[in-house]
Amino acid sequence: MDNYRYLIDFDTDKIRKEYYDIIIIGSGIAGVYTALELPEKYNIVIITKETIDISNSVLAQGGIAVSLDKEDSPELHFKDTIYAGAGLCDENSVWVLVNEAAKNIEALCKYGVNFDKKENKDELSLTREGAHSKNRIIHAGDTTGKEVCDKLISIVKARKNVKIKERTFAIDILTDNDVCKGVLSYDEDCDQYIYYVSSVVINAAGGFGQLYLNTTNPEVATGDGVSLAYRAGAELMDMEFVQFHPTVLFHPENKSFLISEAVRGEGAILRNVFGERFMPKYHELNELAPRDIVSRAIFSEMKKTESDHVYLDITFKDKNYLESRFPNIYKTCLNYGIDISKDYIPVAPAEHYCMGGVKTDVFGRTNIKGFFACGEVACSGIHGANRLASNSLLEGLVFGRKIGEEVSKILAENISLDTSFHLSYKKNRIKKQIDKKRIKTDIQNLMTKYVGIIRNREGMIIAKNKIDQYYSVICDMYNTSIEDFEIQNMVLLARIVIEAALEREESRGAHYRTDFQSTDDINWKRNIIKVIQKK
Figure (spheres, helix red, strand yellow):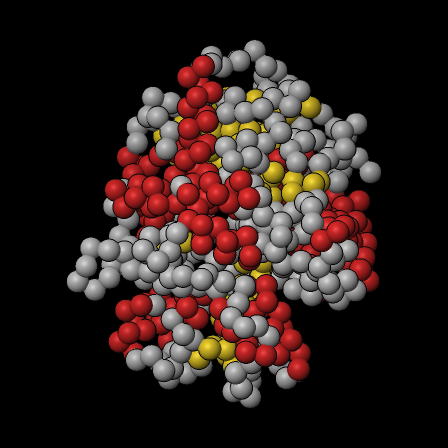
């Protein structure tokens, strides 16, 4: 079966070109903050699949982890991150994350981000989330991601050196001997392919939650950034580790609205459908155990009680408190007839975050020269087998700044752009009439059923065989639309996730196998790297 390098046929001499010093793919916190951390003398374009305000970052509720309290320290934040990551964190990356957290939060405050403050004080208010040993989550109500992104986007829009291209799909990065040459894209508004030319591309395209049926991710999260990196020869790491958030609203009209971990941080308890509290049976940290443990506990209770959800109970807090601390959650639940000051909230786990992605170092560098990755699309080893709550927005900030430093250094040494590069790519592709919507739904069902919270070889082989069939149907397909590009990316990533999950014959963090239930440090305390086989 042929691994096609590019999703479309093209000739760089025959398509429209635009020249930039730096290209950023993605408009979440990682992409936008990185743009702000780069000197204004550089000409930057941000290309984003939908409008600039649609991203996973915007949906982030809980907050950002940072050790600010006098009883806390970067060392304790480090320990908690390592513990949650179940033995697979890269310690060097984690040290960078926790030690550089405070200065990046300071930068956000200077940009005007309005975090909640302690009563009658100028200090930031701190709460706790799962697997944190101290209160260290700063927040803006329960819409922290939106508050941060709104402020950063308003500033980036005012920057004369930054151009924002919305409704622009990044199809592939162009490379020559593992050197980045720019981005091949499709502009939806003018129905045209554009080659964005640059020797520096920063991939901040987000994760691949849409591989699963129920996810907290927006519809744009089809893994395009991971896929284009893989086709270009970038290494992928930890792709088997997919985090399921334990508490997502379970309502006939909405199964993707996140009920933030901060609700449990403020004391909410989990009850099964019979009203019984169950977390003390599963872990000493009860409702604030690491996410993988809470998700499996809920899954187990649902199985025992033959139900499709459990309940989250915060009825012991009064209405005024809940309305001010969790305004968005309070209002959204009320819209569905749930008054969280009186009613239990029906919840179930849903896909939330991909620990795996494009392998990078602490400066966001990949194995392709000039190609960087940051945020959920990247894997620098911070999260290991299971991400610690509220480390994701922080990751986008800390490593966005590190990339800014590194790229500034590279461009200061060499600003001249190679405009002589020419590439023509043509394959014998076939025009096919296929039901892409049905294939997408089937992938989501297969991944949820067989490669979800609980896995085993037998189920994953069923999923793999079906995904392989889809791959053989679409691999030589003539791609002309965003739906075509997305289905190519989803099938590719589903195969990679399944292959990595089959390879890891143990249970660790978010990867739990009923046929290999114990953690095997002797054979598996290592990362699985996936890279395309070049012909």
